[in-house]
Image 1 (cartoon, protein in one colour):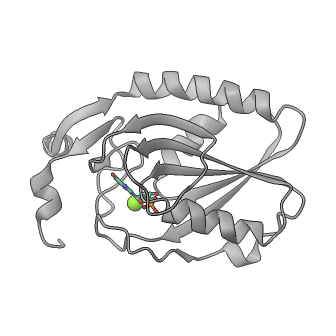
Image 2 (cartoon, helix red, strand yellow):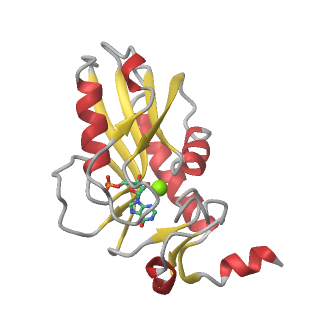
Length: 187
Ligand code: IMP
Ligand code: MG
């Protein structure tokens, strides 16, 4: 079966579906309490945040707005280029609003910093950030993150929305990709 072939590319599972959902319950409860008196505007960075966004937001029983952004910094490789390009952000009107940026994983910090800077130019009332995963590493950028799902070692992880070359997003768990697959030339 092809699905099992994909699973054999995973070195080890870090968080299974049950662990992810348990942590999302806690994160959603915290966010719900923090935003109970104001309208939340969620800015979700696609595509890696897709599963996280849909599972987290369904646990937040507050009125909220959702804006999805496509941002690219990787260009298909595992190293960030450091340049973050936006497709829709120029048309956002978020002045005076309370923004919560959602991203799948905090790695170098380039993406979150670039998104935050861009959003600041629209003069929102507040900006916070929420990531499912944060890599334990020295960052190129000093970024503030208000909600973190799990800390992970500095390894390449996939699944539950996270990809390598657009693959593995549909795995229901988060796992470490086998190192030899990262070293292969673009395919
Ligand atoms: P940053 O700009 O270096 O913080 O990178 C953030 C983006 O890089 C994330 O939103 C992911 O799309 C991608 N990324 C970084 N590390 C990983 C990983 O281990 N697996 C999959 N994607 C990753
Ligand atoms: Mg990605």
